[in-house]
Image (cartoon, rainbow, N blue to C red; front, top):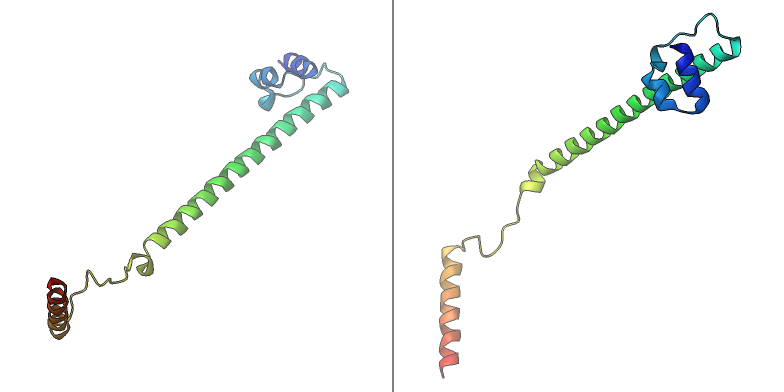
Length: 113
């Protein structure tokens, strides 16, 4: 198995080496010190790269979660949910409503002439 992995590494075929069990491999005793060192080095590099990828993905998930939490807290804050009252939605006090009606009636009477 170690020889198949070493051959794949020598050919530059990392996928074949991974498929042959690079991460779980141990060098054979019959190999040269250079061959063993190359196999161990490639195995350790792949392990480091995979751990770095896991850390990156965890960081991306953490950042996305924090961003979603911030967005949710912004959406649920009382200030964001408060709407400013408009004239169309707020009823006028009775005296103001009566004055408005009289003014509108006078204005309507002027336009009839």
